[in-house]
Image (cartoon, rainbow over all chains, first blue to last red; front, side, top):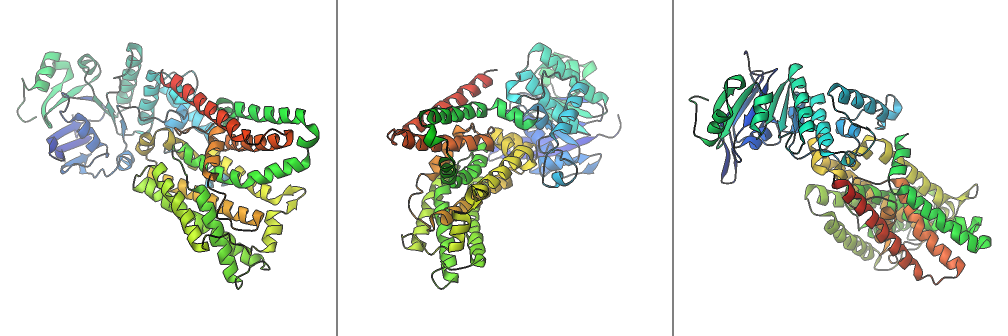
Length: 253
Length: 329
């Protein structure tokens, strides 16, 4: 499978007396969807926060392309091509989809107007429409505040935003949790499309059928440690649940 | 549709504009001889200029879902420091002083406002204290500081050139005070509506966490927004100084509430994320037109605050039900 794109080794993170991560490791390769699963409190969210720069681990190392990196902030992670789709929708509901897509990376008009910070809304809207079309996100209008869209469309915009800017890896924390059947399929289609472009997708999910349907590999966390790794094509729901609950464990995972 | 036209049509702005036009039409129909005159127009505009400048800064603050109760006190403080500096530069009475003194006075007023705005911003954004509490504190402190400096009395000795130039002067029939307020408002509207600074202001008010995750420097931006409100309050203090030719330490207790009322009437949401300077202009003129209209038509002027209150509560109610309807999806 070659060199891992992202590797975490022995991460420890404590919040007061709570040990969220107790030497957790994690690996992701380019061009794959790897599912990160575990019971509530297994440390999935904390691990993702440490790997996307939101939190800093107390000890352990993070390697990108085999090189140790420091992820001090989400901005630092983004500069390395790592984006995150958060579980709770991280969109500004009063702004339109294009403004949300370009939030924090707004395009300025060329020339003197741009020096004053004047935005090129037309160009942003054009590019946003293009990106939405490429990713198969259908919106009836790119002109309305995102809060007026349905939950699925909002989530599609949030996913699209991370995907458009990511160049290496995308974390998706429960991206389909609040969605209906059709919308869920659409988001999963986007996930596959992103993988096919050669990026790594880390999918955090509770939904086992979804994990089996879309992922190439599965890594299991339990009590702040990686306890098992599976190739999706050769595993079953029973095996995954067994690893999550502690009924099954692998040596050296 | 351009983004400005779109915002105008989607927000409450259009309705508020119609309400304002309706008011003018009603008063105009009742007393066409007195209402629709150049003099009435001029005085209404002049009397509203200072409040308008305060309200432009307030619009930014409220769009970030904050509030600034201190603007009226900062106005007083800035007027006092500005007038006292100008007097000090001219042996205690600046009445006969020239433009050099006036420019120093302007700089002092702006810096005084900036200092209070910076303090508000740092306490809100860095220390994380709710803006209501922070600015309630500076509301009291700035007024107290101004009164301490002036020994509790008004400061006179304002240069005649300032009073005659900015205060009561006109340019092709338009009062200079109005021109200045219009320029500030136009710049404020353009920055909010078309620039990255404006976009980030909306984003922070709409979802602060999302803005932070998108890599926007939320803390620094909030400090700059409160700083802007402070500087504009300082400028308003200087304008009041020019108009009244005295730095008054009283009579500005409710400037903050008038500014907030104007902003909210103009369709800016107290929940943040929504609003416009254009709306604020309309919102500021509704109470002004009501007051003027009541005086001219002969209605007891004490009805004005009651009428404003009704419109204000209706506007907020409308905003809330609109949000509820949207969030139910």
